[in-house]
Length: 388
Ligand SMILES: Nc1ncnc2c1ncn2[C@@H]1O[C@H](COP(=O)(O)OP(=O)(O)O)[C@@H](O)[C@H]1O
Ligand SMILES: [Mg+2]
Image (cartoon, rainbow, N blue to C red):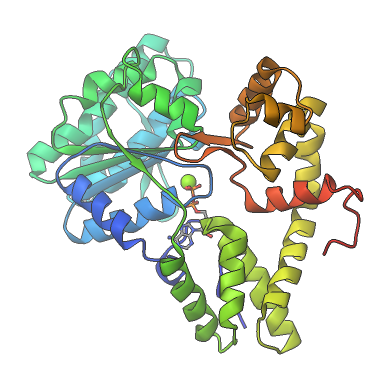
């Protein structure tokens, strides 16, 4: 029987816990053309939430284009993918004949090479090695298209830029270029998704940054127990696998409703219980947790080995508790030395997305299993064996 939990990919359909409040708010924003910026640690469900919203909005005839900046490391690639998504999301719904549809790209400074995929859809390529100025003007032209299409077709348009923290790596001038175009696109809701909170926040809230006040901040938190508990029960029930109420609580107490980590722990819990032909109890959840940590051990070891001894100390301290990390008492208790050293290590850890800072929660390690893994390796007995 197939495991009823999924982690790693975008959660859709029955694998998506209905985040009804966030979903409604995001849909309402997009409907009114409000720009939003969704910031959270990785694997918190940003992409899943937006995909769900887009699916629903398409049924209301909103036109949607989505681009993932992780997949566009250079300006050329960014232009290619932008053209692809503009074509499939904003042009193809009106023009069945793609030869005619690609006319929208003919006025750009660089004309794309068009190749036809096996399924008959075209994809676009802007030749590498063109002058940088021409590529920039081409990108500018592409970015303007959603606005033009919105007014021509009298439709609301959503343009989603996922993994937006990568924008500066593609080209430091891109944010300024985007602002220049986006600020005049009242019909287009621009949705920016990103991790690396420090970067994302700076780009949108520092008045010296080009994207300053361009989008409404939309913080995405863990999924609440009221939403997650019924989801877990229902997923177990769908496969006829029993789970005790205390086991559901144990899962959520372990993961704090972290979307990815909850699905992963449930995945292992379900498969243990299934193999044993028994009800999932808190004891099964604990064994599942040990399995998850074992499965992630190689990855975490690599991460750990890449840290300086002081960064490891700071990380281990955060797992124990993270109140007033710069205070003398805290530094003495965890033998962290000077406050400036703590600050330096925290900066590196935040950059690597191992630690997350927000005014609401302070410094913390968002990855539930990494927390458990660190607690284990830094335990007085060296963490080998016995603790699980
Ligand atoms: N609404 C949701 N309901 C259930 N699981 C979710 C939900 N959102 C995310 N997840 C879980 O988290 C994982 C990561 O989600 P994703 O949308 O890729 O996060 P992000 O874009 O923030 O990195 C998914 O594979 C899924 O297991
Ligand atoms: Mg994502």
